[in-house]
Image (cartoon, rainbow, N blue to C red; front, side):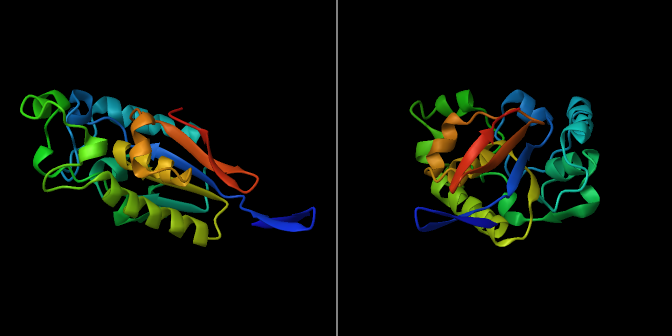
Length: 200
């Protein structure tokens, strides 16, 4: 954190950079099945993509946080940062409740107007609830002394986190599409939290 004075106003600006890493592909993610609590391994392709992340991530970030799910833990390990990682339960994927394991077309066969971001999931979470978890992660990041943090987690959770970082409502994550094994960067422009790169 550093400060400067402009026209008599003291402004504080963080130098924190946050890298968001979506886990590599699983059989369910490749098939478009909603995967929340189901603990699936990476596919061979997912493992290869996770290993390739080594060249795209800092070797010694100040803080590494990871979801407790196997697919995120394995991605973190294969990317070379497993030894330094701290499990954060708030990084777990959206709880899809009754829709766990189903594809969107399957859900819409009985509920044609369903929209996950608007409606949430029966017996699972709403975007608001996922946003509350994302806010706790952001608060933890901002309270840390880290200059560079790397987070390994899941598609929908990270989309919500990106929206909340930019101080948008959780449902705004709907427009932040995210592929497996991608790296997105959150940071600052002066005093404003911004998305510097997405789905890279």
